[in-house]
Image 1: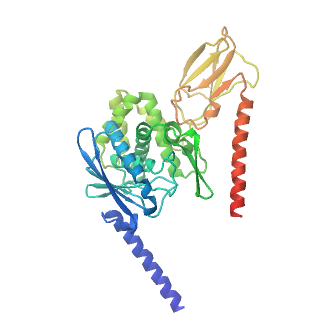
Image 2 (image 1 turned 90 degrees about the horizontal axis):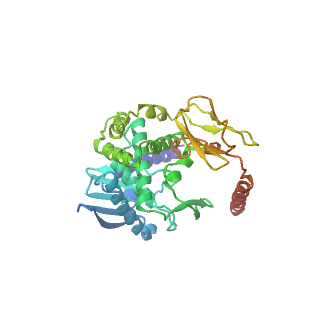
Image 3 (image 1 turned 90 degrees about the vertical axis):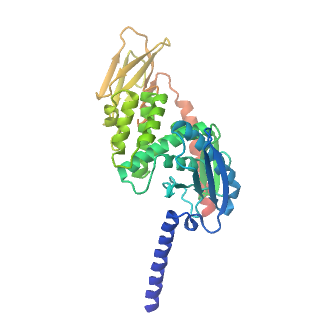
Length: 406
């Protein structure tokens, strides 16, 4: 009994010491708790167009040394991209740490700061093909968090906004600085096999804007909340235009404070730079628990001269409705999106061939894009063939996975 008590006490002390060492490792430039004693150090320098140099320090795991060049290339591309979008990097040094305990499967942690030396955590995988966005995306996101001053000590509201701004700008910089190289990637057999899908390239609109996370019913509330904010920013970009959005982001970075009014400050800055009242936009998109869903409600067979659209969820947002006729002509109707149902009549027009809500995809928060369009000509056979092949591949993978671990 005494031996059990002594062992239990020893274990508790060991856990406490390890936790303290980990925390201290985060607070000091001595990073053994984060990088591990076997990490390898590499250095490089990035020189901005204006002549300012940023000294790069990389602490990478020994079995990831072959990816050091990818770390540095991503950091230099990101620093150049952020420099054009948001302004100069706020430090002359940057430390990148490949942690001894990987945290893959979720966003990397917030940047760490020791005095004026920013530190970011960017995990690597022992096998990352050239088309896999590891560790490049982690590096780009980490640098973005430094620009937006994302800290673990922030309250939830401020952290969510700045994390969303960091994710949104990271996707923009990633797409511009490293275009067309990366593909959607899945890991099979419990992460042992990495498979990039070359026919599914990484895109800002899907992967960068976190559409998959926003629509995943199994995703954690914090992740879906962040995805909601990122999609709201993408919607704002479509409302005000890319050039105006860039000026909003640059001004927001320059004016940001460390207060809990970050959201109010950003909304005020956006309205000022855009030169218009954006209160209704932010009121409509601010709440995470309000969904948007607009749908075309047309008869299953036979084309008519009336287009019917419906409002299926509480979220309200003005949308365009494009109606295409059999003769190839089309009309774009503007709908405030408030009514439960809206009908557009065309008594003297040709039969309607297709109807599409939000054809320019302004409302990125629409949770069901598949019901936003209708066509008089069915494409069911093509869709069935594509989905059947996809499900066949999934089923084959499930059988192989079961056989391997059975």
